[in-house]
Amino acid sequence: MAPLSGPTSKTRKSALRHVLLLCLLLPCISQPLPAPSPSPTAAAPPAATLHLSPFNDRLDAAYVALQAWKHAIIEDPKNLTADWCGPFVCNYTGVFCTAALDDPHILTVAGIDLNHGRIAGFLPDHIGLLADVALIHLNSNRFHGTLPPSMQHMRLLYELDISNNLFSGGFPSFLTSLPSLKYLDLRFNKFDGELPDAVFGRQLSLDALFANNNRFNVTLSSKSLTNSTASVIVLANTELAGCLPPSIGDMADTLVELILLNTSISSCIPPEIGKLKKLRVLDLSRNELAGELPESVGDMESLEVLNVGYNQLSGVVPESICLLPKLKNLTVAGNYFCGEPVSCLHIPVRDDRMNCIPEWPHQRTHEECIAFEHRPPVHCGADGCIVHHPL
Image (cartoon, rainbow, N blue to C red):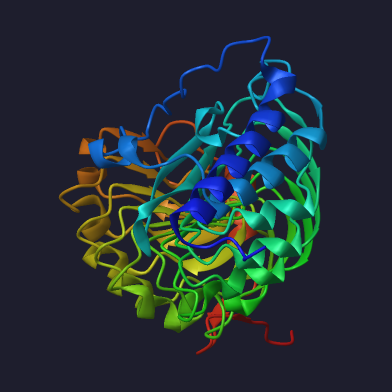
């Protein structure tokens, strides 16, 4: 018999493919396929997408990945994955499909959004088959374990939000090799170990990094934090070693928000911080910062929120800071400032309690302030660190 060829072969292969997919669908046939559940932030798919075939190799791979993921789920109290059944993955709740970037004639999985699902389980290695995914939002669940290395194949991944889960282990090193990653949110997990310098590197070029409330260790230097091109960096409640370096001013072109509260920094505040003219939020509270608050902070013309509360700062609050045109919230409480300009009274939200400002309400006791005055003076080194002179 001659081998099958031409239209007859294609027709039979197509029919066979549909029969196989129908067999996969049979276990779910008792319940109707639901319509896709739109994400609150996801735009409706383009009209052209609606005419693309739901059968192709990429969606077949996505089916394998999502079924493996479903089997790795221990508990799903909101039944978000109850309809993850059958080959039509674009109809799964929380799964979003669109035309592939490299071939607009092929439908592919572009996003996963299971936010606030309280789902318990882990991420299986098969998740790496979702090679075209650009967005993964899993915040406020109970996923545990580590991120599987197979995620390194997600070359289009742009946003990864796994905040408020139970992930643990060291920083997933493959993340620094993802060329499209711009938004990384790891906060409120149990990651530990060193946060590598590459996270702040220009090769990764993150736009937003949230790594707070983990067990990371971060070393501040000109090769780490201040090498970043991110607009938002949040490292609150993380153990930071080193000092705020003068190179912090190198982030002037991009940095909009910097949150380093409760990070155990023992440092001076370098005057170069005044170069951050685009910065809107600066929170350095609950650390061991010493010395004076630099006059150059008054050059940060976009600053809206400044919190340096509960440190060891002293001297007078510079009037240039209180005259900043956009400043709405100023917290200097819990320091040892001895003066504050009257112009600060016009700032809408101001907290200057527990300082040493004469005739100001809610200040430290006279004894506390006298004791502080008798401490050795603070000297700041060129690297931003506090220089301790022998007595």
